Length: 484
Image (cartoon, rainbow, N blue to C red; front, side, top):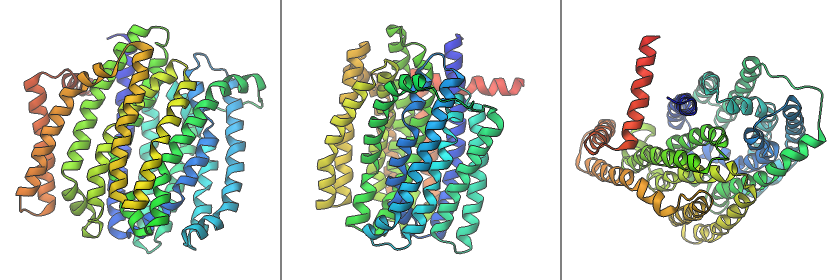
């Protein structure tokens, strides 16, 4: 196995462990909290999410991407970015602290002021963590990141559940997030060993900011428009409706966002090493898209097909309104890794200007969706999101073809077998749910097991390269573990 392939496989494996161990813990914690708390508590946290997320983009500053892309980073580079992140974190915390009463008044929810100010502390915590995390990503050390994530999510989950059980309501969600980030940051500082020097280089800042500024603006646009639905639902509907939407989105994000994060954070530093070899870049990107879509389409269409059993069986009848939202949002989430990989290529090629231009174009498409949501309701808004994400993928893939010759027609041909298998599996799983009259958790178990067996059978029978590649990685890791 070549050094690059070995590095990619190892990075993907440990990043999968990180994301999906964290996913498993978050999933279990989320189920328990959803059974204890009401949709209103989740809606209250969701109302301030957009403000925290937008501020985080300024704190991040796009420098993480710039540092990962730069082939040789100095201590001066890291220290300069660290102090910028830290100062920006404090500045934005102060701004949000002052803004909190106005946000509370906007949503007509008095409790939001204290909740908002507490959650804003995440900005300061994250500003201390960015460089530590970037260094681990740059050297593809996801094993340490996995260990830290599991510890922080487990401990914070225990605290959150204990507080919810003892009647602390929305504060169980707030404190859980804060403890998770504090533990994550603390362990990164203890185990990563990096320390900043007392230096701030103007030359280093300008060099990194030249690339990072465009990434900052792109990230800002993406974050605003990705979270603006919270703002619209919270303002024009109700905090309970926002709670239903958020819970459906959390279920959707478990496989979709986590898989996208795995692929993006591992492939970006790996593909960056191939930025001067377009043919190898194309072949690696093609392999990643085929494998990623095999996994994503199966997980997301399977989740859409079993949404009723999933919601009712795991978090209860009071969340029934989340079912239709989850069914539709799963289709949106299926495209995330496709977007991520095509956009990664633009960063690898140094085209942050094009990255920004495409984000502006795609966000203009979101405006009619917002109007649809206000006028016709949340379901109409999500259907608009499906149309928008398909158009957005076409735009991203068009420029991938222009840069390295991997055109959208070729991409669609590559992913079509995976989509066909996933769609057939989903139709069968949905039909099982409609036909069975068993208790809901038993129905869910049957749907999951059947879907899993169906995919294995299809992969073996059709000799799908994507399936065989994943199977080879799993078997090699099992053999490696046995030998050790």
